[in-house]
Length: 393
Picture 1 (cartoon, rainbow, N blue to C red):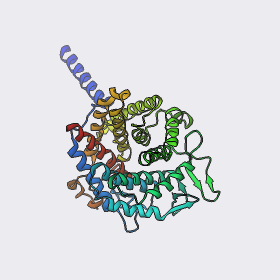
Picture 2 (cartoon, rainbow, N blue to C red):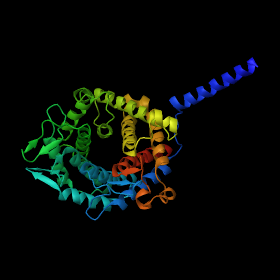
Picture 3 (cartoon, rainbow, N blue to C red):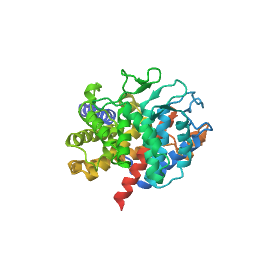
Picture 4 (spheres, helix red, strand yellow):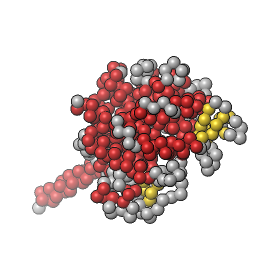
């Protein structure tokens, strides 16, 4: 009887230990997909963006499936980012079909641009603000459009947008976030954890398109600021800040080449993105796991990690200082992209929504999808597809 009781107690402890292990340290789970699945998922995201384009050149900003409603809100930086992702898809895949949609959205950005001296910048038509991020992502999109098409009709527009970016740069390489039309100068008090990396990427793209015009000097200055000072100056608690835009910029610099300091920064970014993917792969919708670890990250965040990893993989592929992390980068890219494939709403699942057309190809978090969920997932997936397909050749 005593032995039976002891056995029952031990069995209870064992089951409890297993439950505790599964709850506190859940298994690392990565879906096993390849380039075809990544590309198909990216194509479904492209289709979502194309369907969401409205007659005024804006996209559907957000959809709440629980209430079958479309909140009355918009964001010009995200508009530029979504448009950029369509051009990026065309440049990466060779499929130029989405450029027609992107060009309509581009024309809207041109129409709302603010002119000052020899530069142009995108201005929010509602509150008249002029933010660095909108123009930087518009410029990045135009550079990718040029890569996809060879069309040079927007070269001068790119230079004018680029001159605005230079206007916003400070002597230490960092950037201010707002231009104030009423003062005719940047707001000296406001920076952005996103806009600095976005501007860096845009400048690096400009140098690669137009070498000899001097775009590399400000790009290197901001790269050094990001690598050496940004986390401390801007007081990020857990450095490095997981900045996929900085990773894009470093990737564009891979043939310049980057400095040792910048290579160390790239390694630290790779470690941060890899850690985030690892943690994400342990999350699920299971009640106890979600209660302790949180539910799955929305695609607007998760996608940025895949973007960052794909950029750093391209850098590591040609930089022997980072050769030792190439394999780990590939593993994390496949894992992150695979989770995105699993979490995207399929056509069959979309049929259960009140509005299937805005559900299919989307990623939802707490019943809400926003246009940048599709943007960042699309960007990460198509780049993951290209890398994975090249590995198979």
